[in-house]
Image 1 (tube, rainbow, N blue to C red):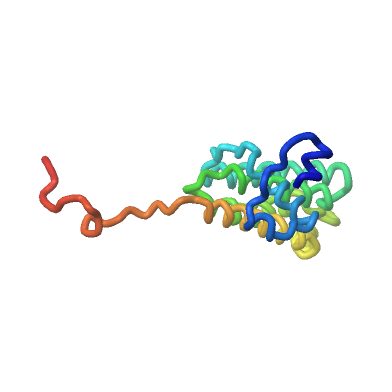
Image 2 (image 1 turned 180 degrees about the vertical axis):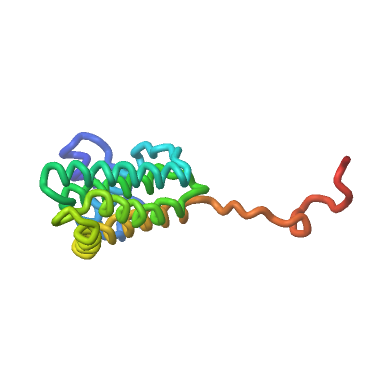
Length: 182
């Protein structure tokens, strides 16, 4: 301790015994902890979408993404899938706590509507369109599962972070028993 004081000219603070025995965390864990603190410090968006609004937003944006992809690249593809995943994540983040189930439920419905409205119809007949819809649904299931699972995971985390809202029955409460005032 005298050596430290002699070199720096300041008195060294004593290290508590409990902290001195702890090994330093590996550098990767320190980075992860710092990233976690940074994520927790970010402002959280205020959820505003109702269940119906979540379904409508997911469907409209997915159909628009499919229409743009069909115009640019002749049928729904990667752009459609990326737009679908982005809107699924946004819907899961912005849905109201009361309507959390709506985000993962609306995702596959919006995907099916988007594929149906923007699928390649082949020769232009009804049969060609139906075959295009089923082909699109079969070939793009990875995008469907990814968007739905991401929405479900975000909703599950949000549901677990909510406080329990169960009300206790009057029999279990500490309030005095008796008749309620009129």
